[in-house]
Image 1 (tube, rainbow, N blue to C red):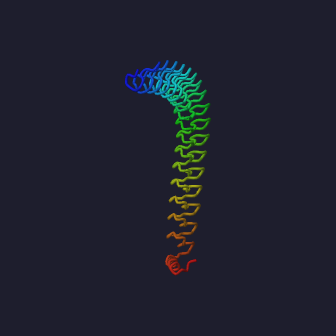
Image 2 (cartoon, rainbow, N blue to C red):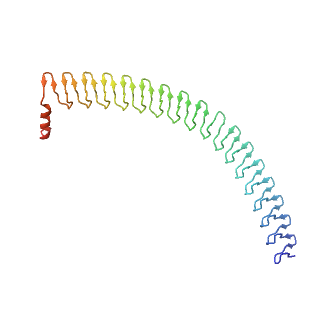
Image 3 (cartoon, helix red, strand yellow):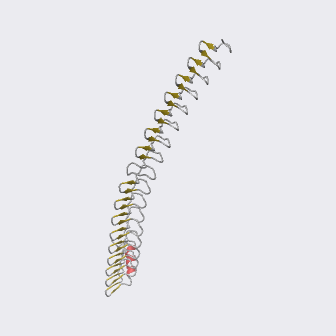
Length: 273
């Protein structure tokens, strides 16, 4: 019989309901959507009908994309080839990482464990929060506590380790024994008798040493005074240099009122060495 002309609708067990040359029935064969794909062949079922079996024995493919939803204890709820259940294996977020496997727990499901023995990863980025005495509160691979070790800002720098304290947490110590660094730039403010008020690595006080302008030149060192603070002395014993250019106006009974003019004359005429 050829109900629709030229294409057989029946030929033996052959049935072509949509009459486009594809069989709907051939023995136990069923093609509901009529695109040449079997819906039934033995235990085979293809509900969405594009060549993929939904059932084959214990095999189930709910989304019908060639991925099994069930195969023995295997369950793939999101149907992306990842098992949700396989024995003790549970993958709640279904990204291929286990949520449960024995004592293993991965709540955020990105392949890092929350619990595995004493192991805990609260922020869930593969870093342990607890493992023995180790604690990592901000959770990016740095321990906050491990014995006497503390890292409050959690950037790999210890805030406390014995006597070590780093309040600004940039790798410089604020306290280390007698060491203080108030501006926290790696220069000491106090270390024994050492004081650096401007905190640029130059000392303001170190024993009798004073540097008021804080540019690395001394204002006082014993009887030494440098008022203009350019590295030349104003006073050193009986020495006085009022103009502070390294030339003495007074030294003992010496008075050199014309010293500036002599210096300027020699400089302009190239007489200075």
